[in-house]
Every structure is written in C-alpha cells, then in structure tokens.
Image (cartoon, rainbow, N blue to C red; front, side, top):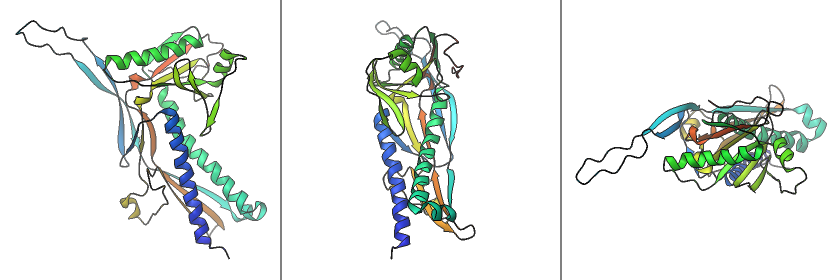
Length: 299
C-alpha cells in the first residue's frame, strides 16, 4: 500500500523544485545578477539619478575643486509583501478523472498562474519607464530604446553589459515578414536571442506590451527580491511549508479537508522583479495610431 504522506511530500517537493528551476531559467534568460532576500513588508524603491550641472571643470593649480552634483531621487515605491494562494481539488474530480489528472494538471496550472502573477507586475512596472520618446518605425524604436538606456547609464557611470527588450509579438512578425528567425520558448515565454543588438528580445502580447511600444533596460538594472517562506518567524505560527532549500522563492503545502472532501494546496510567496533605476528603463512609441493600441507611455 502506498504511503500517502510520502506521496504528498514528494508532490510538494516537485512543485517547489519546478518553480525554482523555472525561475533559474528566467534569470539566465534575463541576465539577472542579483537575487535579494528581504523581510516581508519591506519597501522597494526605484531611483532616478542625474548629473545636474554636468562634469565640473578641473581647477587651476591650488584652486578649490568644484563639485560635480549627481542627484539621486526616489521615483517609485512598492511594498514587498507576503502573498497567499490556495487551490482546491474536490473529491468528485479525483473520482471522475483520476488523481493523476485532477491533481497534477491543476498543480501545473497553479504553478503557471503564480509565475505569471510576478511577471505581469514587472511588465506593468516597465510601463512607468522614464526614458520616453517616439520614433517612426519598429527598427528605429528598438535602436533608440537601447541607445537611450546605454547613454543614461554612461552618464551616471554605471556599467552596462547587455540590454534586453520587451516588444509586442505582432510587431516583430510584421517587421520580419517571412525572414527566418529562431524563436525560443522557456518559462512560458517566447524570446529571440541576439536580435538587433539586444541580448534577448521578449515577444509579448497586449496588455503586457501593446502594439507600437518597445521597452528596454540593462540586465544590471533588474533585481529579484523575495521573502523566504521558511522563515522561522512564519514557522512560529505553526505554518510549515516545503521549500526548495536554496533560494526558497516559494513555500508549498498540501493537505486534505474532510469538511469539504477536497484536497487543498497552499502557496506562500513574496516575489518582485524590480528595476533599481526607473530612468534606466526606456519606453518608446512608434508608428501611427493604427498600430499603436494606446499603451501606457510612462511618466
């Protein structure tokens, strides 16, 4: 006879492992260098930085050295909070479809929804990019989006190794026509490597990226902040979640509910993709009103 406890624990481990593996893949695609553990309730801050008077002239011998004023200003804030989710599978579904389908398929869908929740918030954050402009064509919008972020980081003496872009999939295929390009899919995302000077171009759909918009930022500008669900203070509540054991991005627990004759799955997480410099994100519009769906152009 199967050990039910062992089966449930194995399912929990599988869930958090797959979630962590997907995020590792995304971090590699994006080039994210920093995964930062934060306490729940932490406020995330994005900044703007500008040399307000340019580089001060070098003084004559024996004269005071004038200051070069670089002003750093808080531009956006968001709370990093614990998020709680629950998925329920009624016993009727197990009887009708079998445990493998009723449980595993819904686990898969649950995992995708949790991942997309984090990504959607990041796409919305990109819409607030401060480096805005308008170009005539998709090609020029991509070129200027990259040029503007490189110029910005040069002016504040920040290193840029690679730049990634986020575009509407229909704009890409309208531009390339019948050209043969390799579109890769991972983590549920479509992307092109080494396209028009970008390390990665992500192909998204509205409303994440509207037609007629290009968003770009250096990989150095993207951090992944998270709360650790295995934190001892959380365990003091009697809430013990299975975690991946490395970065602990998500906690997962499954148990049966006799009151409703169902199986409940609980996910605990606190994850945010965040850009340190909001004026290190370009949000470029292009084309006419016929192919621009009126997306958020930033502030």
